[in-house]
Length: 174
Image (cartoon, rainbow, N blue to C red; front, side):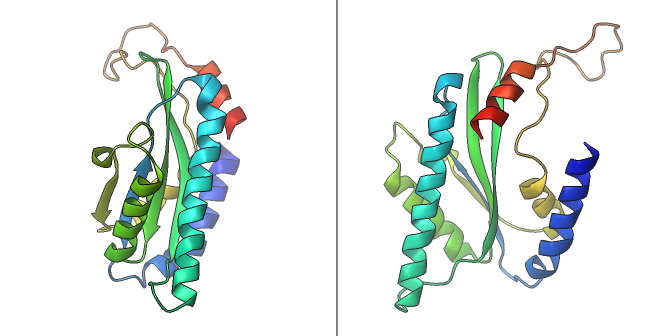
């Protein structure tokens, strides 16, 4: 926890000055359909390959003078649904313009069949608080999963259930 906190602070201190210069920054979330544990590693690989292909294609277009230059910060994160026993990997990205955000989502959906990703599950919004959104991008790749039925205000002596196996599956697959 301490090492993760130090790493997060270093990343924030490194990227925040650059992010503060972007007048039209956008926060983007790219998702794919949830998968079970045995398919998680291949889902991560496919998502990374797809995003890298989008970035490489745009870089070539930019070099030819036919596209804008992408600038951004990205992270890969994964949530666990203990009820369905599925994993939801997704990217959080901050890009320097609305146009870049729209291009990334459009090309993500062109590469992904509806069986892989749906339009309504992709998200973008203007960055209003650079610090908050940068923390959202760099906070973690995964988190300790606790029982969703536990009420945070519940003062009972029942300890929360922690899904360590799910956490292990995510870390191992990443």
